[in-house]
Amino acid sequence: MHQKNNPKHKVDIAKLKQAVSLLDFNFIRQYFHNHNVVDIAQDVIEWEEIDVATLFRLLSTKKSADLFTHLPPIYQKKLVHIFTSKDIEKLLGDIYSDDIVDILEDLPANLTKKILTLTKKDDREIINKLLNYSEDSTGSIMSVDMIQLKKTDTVSKAVKKIKNAANDIEITHYFYVVDKKHRLIGYIKSEDLIIAKNDTVISKIMRRDIISVNSYDDKEVAANAFKAYDVSVMPVINREKCLIGMITSDDIIDVLEEEATEDIHKMAGINPIDKTYTQMTTLDIFKSRFFWLLFLMLSATLSQATLDFFQGWTNHLTHVAATGAIVSTGITATLVAIVPDLSGASGNAGSQSSTMVIRALATHDVVKKDYRKVFLKELKAGFFIGMALFVANFVRLVIYYTVRNNGLSDLDVWISLSGSIALWLVILLAKLVGGMLPLLATAVNLDPAVMAAPLLTTLVDALSILMFFLITIGILMAAGQI
Image (cartoon, rainbow, N blue to C red; front, side, top):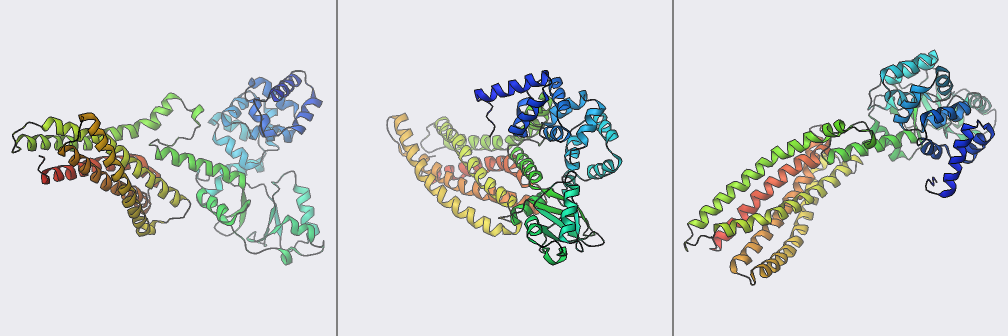
């Protein structure tokens, strides 16, 4: 485990930096032997780029390629700027094609061209093919550095193939078997090769319960397949069922992180952006956040208009009350003071439901046809949660008005009761809206995460204010208080 704040670790990394300045090959080689390359990558990003470039020149081809792939994209870009053509050629020799594609996607056009020019012709054709896949497709993250076994191979021949290609392929627990037309027909595990006799034909020991994904499938399809079948690697086929690549668990971890980040951004009303927080400029932040804040501000006009309408209505009713007392200001102020509590509770209730349903949709625990199941579940939850909050809120308001007014009037009791009933029904409504909106979005092929914050906030705010005033004024009129 990486211990960046450990004093001994700080001494060790300082020694590594000194070894680089002294060109001490032996110390550097021993250091990489004793430390994980991921931890080293986290340390060297704090160095000057020129020192890191010197380190790369002192490493073996494999070690330098491994270290480079674990550096952040923004740091890779800085290094490519100062690397010589010889440095880049050294790196490219041992970086897998899918990792090269990941690097190129984050580089400006001039650096991409520089790298592709120095790539071997065969590798360049593969990389260009991968770059042409849609960013959201499985093909964009697959690796083509793999070996294909034939069903007519013997175990000894298969092992020899794997050994000869070991330096050029990604070694995994699974090896895939194809027919004469390169169509995927099965797979074999590494332990099967170890246990079987050398003259055994692959077709006799291969497993046929093959699970694969298509290169044009969405990356989320592959991620869900990994989860469902609990595998560490999965083959990728084309429309003709031919084996063209594979996806490993480290690729899927990146996909899951990207998808989770995107959903979190959307649920917070932020337009997703393909940069980390530290990489974003002030302009990037402005563009990602301004639109939804503007939308919410403008949509708040609906809530404001509702509030203004009922405030005017309350004024009118109390002015013409039989008692003739001008109590409009007091009642209106009392009712308006409850609105923020009501809006906050209903907004949170709706967010809870939408978050749960969106997550259930993402994990396929819920599908879009489950609207009846979701509706009934949220209806029951909203009813009982609303009932519990009704009791708590009634007690809260009674105590509050008693303390504020040094006593409790009939009007205070009726406002406490009507406000709590309104809260109960508003919570119920918010739960239903929050649960059903993501399903509605899915039904019309929209991202359900988009429905979570902006639209939910707008609808629930306006509806909660409308219901609160209708219920409260209705009860107060029936009780003869206005």
